[in-house]
Image (cartoon, rainbow, N blue to C red):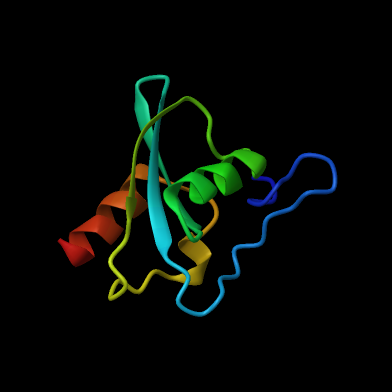
Length: 95
């Protein structure tokens, strides 16, 4: 698997977040599968833009949600496509 933060040209989006930057749960449907990406951003539209620049927005965008601030998401899960198993485990921890 390639670098999870591939960009267009020289643009590369880092998963590093500012303190207190919200995280967004973005869902895309492609080939009858749902893909989840968690992106840090100040708004949903900016989270979608970051995912797009990183090439993580394959397929149709279906929904996006700001994660509650109390959710602690491992840095390794931010800024890449989560497997369906990873997404289910993460969601199960918090629901």
